[in-house]
Length: 223
Ligand code: AMP
Image 1 (spheres, rainbow, N blue to C red):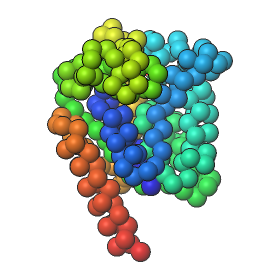
Image 2: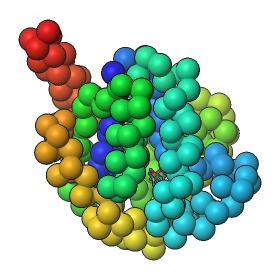
Image 3: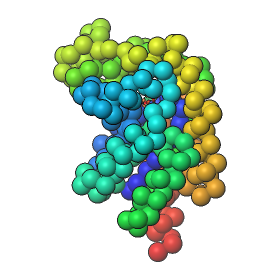
């Protein structure tokens, strides 16, 4: 099962990708997380990527593609994967198609997540992350038991610099100008399922599972 989770920053696709990957035992590939690892490790890629990330801009394709394609081709993705945050423009989508074509594989479904701008901004602004284990919290919607301390490992939580209000608007602009084009791209291929993310996490997950179920039924019919 190979899936793409597409949608605006802050829509909640990362949270859902984590839930579905756990449930379906497939890999969760977050291009943002992979890039942040290179930044923390201060690799050559990381040093270049940092500048773009902090400004809310897209990191150049050649830096992201190498990391993501490497992961897709790794043994941990053999059973399938969810791409979260990749592709983010048309050229990345075409590179992804070519990469999968080469090994006679394809994307099974693209879930396109939507929510109101008000909810998106609230979700981004309240997001807090554990520096040690990466667990995600939200100040209002899913706070830790003790203020600013991770429930899972006891480390301090932090706010991503690109989640600060001055960068959020740039990230949303980049999304509208570059990533939204992918909606028509995947719609025309008949792979798109739209998921409304205004509600509760569990309800959204249920809608995704229903989308996956309808997919298997359709595919069973075609056999
Ligand atoms: P995310 O965690 O998905 O919100 O990504 C955080 C930041 O990483 C983005 O604002 C971009 O600067 C960068 N990034 C993540 N994925 C990509 C991608 N597919 N292409 C280019 N830049 C990316």
